[in-house]
Length: 521
Length: 115
Image (cartoon, rainbow over all chains, first blue to last red; front, side):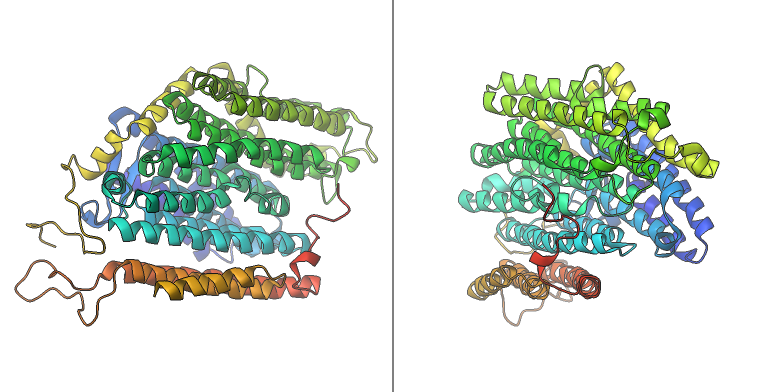
């Protein structure tokens, strides 16, 4: 039963995608399937998270091949938490898409491809095998290519060209890093790797591979200096796609960094983690400055995605249990807020009746839709880190972790980045809500059929509620984050769960087919 | 073999430096093939010893070639081919839409006059 539950985050969206493809010519059926599948994923992910937190790490060996030979699926607290939050975002975006996606994109296969994206995201979160992680990244990547260019407007194609080019290179880097790691250890299982790497004679080579991983995952996560593709591409596709990209794709990169640099590459932390630390600091500042330079709402949010990636990686680079817990907390907070911001920007665009969200065209939102403003205020304030919303607690934890370990420069960078963000939020509020508009915005509920309007507003409401409830009652998430942080800092439980408490592995010669005597194949 | 990989990567990087999207794609082909050859090389090269389990044995004999890198390469080739065909189609579409494949001239998503 638990084995099926652990595989469910992959199987559920995969089944949904397959069913949606079967119903290719029936958009209505696809909508129902997509929403139902997303809902089922959310329920199952919640059950998996509860089971993992309750009974410890869940491990499934695919095809009953014992680790480290077969592919292992592992749901540890971090994976379970990420899958749960990702599935909630999936559901919200699927719901929003019902109201927003146009018939052309729907005919082009939006729903099945969206589900395939969720397969890739969940697969990357749950796999315990490095090559398998590469494969899930590819699944995610190819579906994100299609989603990005779906609709085929000129802007989209332009953004997609850059996104595709940079990601193809990142993919090759990742594959090369995985291959070299296999070359020196003879295994691809992450838990097994963490055991074997300290035994490798040439530790310099290990550090070189670690840097290759930083580059590969840094490109996916949009860390400085690999972030430039993100503001070029993220504002171009359909709103639901923007939101799920902003919420999940870069965060999968952060998750991969977290996993790899807490479990596998811990031997030379002084070298690799200080690289990460500097990258994180510069990312925070550059992202915040970039967002201030933007003259368009969605572009400003794209830059903010970059800025906050820096905060998370800072927690990873400091790597104390508190800092890792802060990163986990921040990940959850940021996924919710970023998805919400992009969905909100989509609504604002719809209200202003235009093709884009340039600041020059916005304004007068408070007069047109006061309640919507209240709703939009929640993610905005949380982004800036106003107490008592979720962003405040994430920043507080990070600052505390930074001060405890005397990383004063990083704390300063984090606070400056936060200050710039507050400035941006103030400007957005003035431009979007208070300023007299060039043309008055349309009324939301009367300009749309009522069913579609609800599909647009409900996800916002839901996500804002999550932000507020995390902010007002952070204890529960703080406890979970503390457990995540602890499990990332001391990975012996993870290793033991995967390898089944096997004694120290006997070192295998490089390239030798790994085998144990007495095993029958 | 390692030298061949190095040469291919160098060629790929040279192609990446071009402004033509098509050349960048050729660079990607070269790079992904370089990586595939690298996987084969790190799996250790042996000659004429297929990884077959003898009739009366349970496990592979020592010194046979390693079958896992080949499985990995097969996966990587399939994925790489899929990505490449998508990228080529995208490039064609970009040429139709914008009339150029010069990446410096593609400024639709980020107009140059923007601050």
